[in-house]
Image (cartoon, rainbow over all chains, first blue to last red; front, side, top):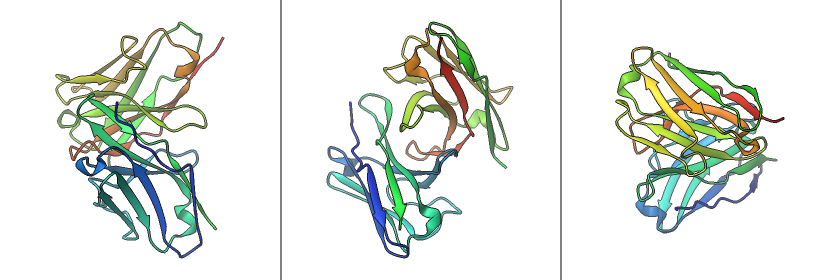
Length: 108
Length: 119
């Protein structure tokens, strides 16, 4: 089945740019979605279909997808961006939703 | 306002059964596909099951296939997950989530209900 690989953790200085990667075989052919989850809370969709922001999501969140890597970019990182982030795709071959293992973002 | 509220979680013994419910409001439930996603304590998100708006298409994760049954009642705006033959590996917070209809992303999630499988 399709697998998505994320780094366990990423650190970023306050106000700087954080990049969280999601690796998968030819992932560029997939629509990748990203979720933010804070402790004790449900996940929140922050990017859908690679690079689209739902209403209410700050413009500093953006996404890209190329080759074997999709990337969530958080510009001008704020303290409130500290959270776990998950990438997700729909694997049509197995008819399964697939999540990456998650990345803990620390804002220093 | 879109709302999804899960219920039915609790403590159950290994081998036991539990039925989760997800009551929805604020949108036309019958027009949306739905998912169950779970999260074991301290672990990542794991997709459990999908059901289409008409119940015509259903999918399960390999880890629950044959033990869990997803269903919905569009007249009651509710989603269900019947869980049988539970093991400690099923211990998790279970979320219901609305499929946005755009490439399989889930745009609204409930707050989750905790299922603990233990003797």
